[in-house]
Every structure is written in C-alpha cells, then in structure tokens.
Amino acid sequence: MECTVSWTGGSKASGSKSGMSFLAETGSGHTLVMDGAPDSGKPENGGANLAPRPMETLLAGTGGCTAYDVVLILKRGRHDVRGCSVKLTSERAPVDPKVFTSIHMHFLVTGRGLSASAVERAIAMSHEKYCSATIMLGKTAAITTSFELQEA
Image 1: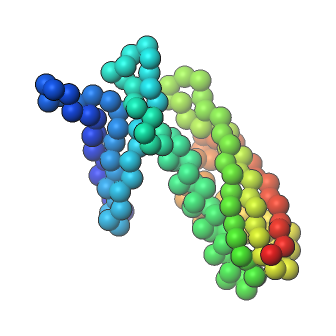
Image 2: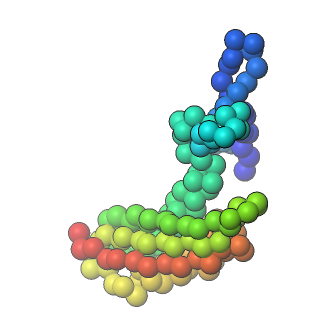
Image 3: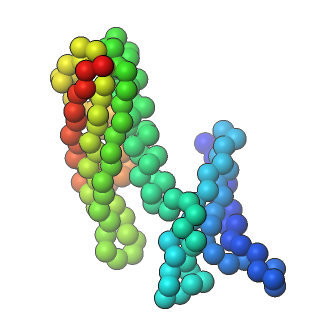
C-alpha cells in the first residue's frame, strides 16, 4: 500500500505557498484533500477550513474499516444485513502528540431478522482480529462500542 501526500498551499503573488492544504494520492488511484483549521493567532500555520483535518480523516478511515468488517462478517454468516453506519466520537490528548485517548463507536445496523448476538459478535471480531485501524488506534485510545438494530 502506498500514498503520496503533497502540500498544495495557495499561491501568493510572490509564488510562495501559504495555507495548510494537502492532496493525498493513493496507490489505488484516488485523491483526497485535507486542510487545517484556521489559526487566527498565526495565520501562516492555519488552513482555510476547505476539507477535513488529517486526524478527522484518520477517524473516518477507522470507521470505514470497522463498518466494512461488520458488514462482511454478517454477510458471510448469511445474515440479511441491509445497512450499517457507525458514529465515532473521540477525545485527544491535550498536548503534543495529540493522540486519540478515547474513541466510542456507535453502530446502527439495519437488516431483516438480525440478532443482537450476531451483530455483537461481528463488532467484536472486527475490533479483536480484522480491523487494522481499530487495533492500531487501540494502542493509545480506550475504544468502546455500542449498537442499535433496526428492522428493514
């Protein structure tokens, strides 16, 4: 797996770059823009709030990784899963490096005749064995989960 991340900044009349915008080009041929938050105290350090922050992107990727696993595990178990979303809320350390210290994932799984035990098992398998992102972030963050079932 590979990815190239390039600072795009913005062109000033002098030709120098300013701002904190980055373009990621993935090995699979996709692009993703990331930007920083505006910094009124040090404008040269801030972004223009035009795209997600890098850490938001990391959190979103973690949600995508675990939701992918949950759906795949349920499908492989021949469960009639129709939808899956996960809302992630997190806390970060107050000082650098501002790693994630806690992450809560709330899953909403929709399907026909899904059992709570099957969904609970799929989430546990993702977090204990398959989701690389969750397992990696679990080294610094306390990760908790909850879920709701919705009949389709």
